[in-house]
Length: 376
Image (cartoon, rainbow, N blue to C red; front, side, top):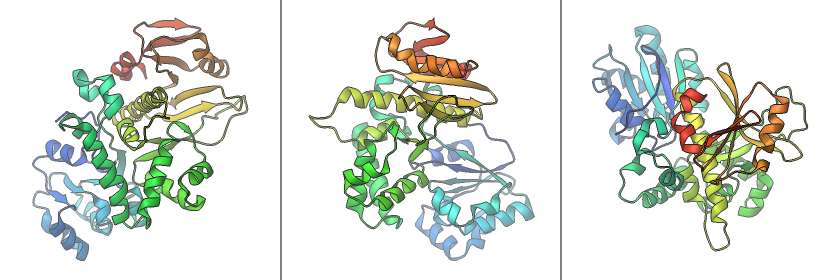
């Protein structure tokens, strides 16, 4: 198991929110081996606490340690008991969850100000260190099990089949599993693109309002997100719709159908863009860097893949899947620098040379990822 670079404040309660399979449970057990651990995926525990949430106290034998509750969204009514124990007995909890929807609908605000919220991501290049292999991660992503499973491809297919489809049905979030499965494939064609819900609905033959709800479900289950447009002090006409991404490049490639008519080079380019973005998101959250992450695109289709904006800095990043770069690859960054000369600009590519042109740092993707904390 890899050490996780997750910064949390001691003696403080937290929600740790992330998709299934990102390693939340393993991290809890290894980081806090002496703490009481309540696993709501255990049927007996789930049944007892669902019937009587106040029985949670009977599971607590070592209240001086942080108390771990796994998959809190399975019994949201436990939040009332957790809230009481924080208030009355000053206990500290780490609560993991993989469904923001259930927590939001069942009273997560009861803990507002008493429990911080932190995202839990798949592995990062900093955590993998020498085990990071760009080609491997481009194909299979960063879910922890990928690095121990004998067949990463089979694991990802199983992950998609059991979690992204069947579990969604079991949770009662959708009624038509075949329609949702078609939606998932159609949504994969929107990866890294400006989201057009109407087009996705037409492609999967599902009503637009249903598809809109499906996208919300993906976001609530923390397995997809929308990237907004950077528009602060905009000096040009910008598009207004967000981009769509699945949270992991390996999960994306497992969902994305591939056949004779598909452009594999294009898919790999989107996967590389996704890989960089998921690393930016994970390291930003893990290290408490405080950036908001955007993209930038004008109505004339000049674009910058990612913009990081926050108290720690201002960065513009373009990602290219090629071993060389052309002058035209810098055009979006140059235009962005005209409007925002304060920003540090990077072009990331698959070559080996580090250069600087027109105030833009051109560097290999792997070098950027290995040095990312020092760069951003």
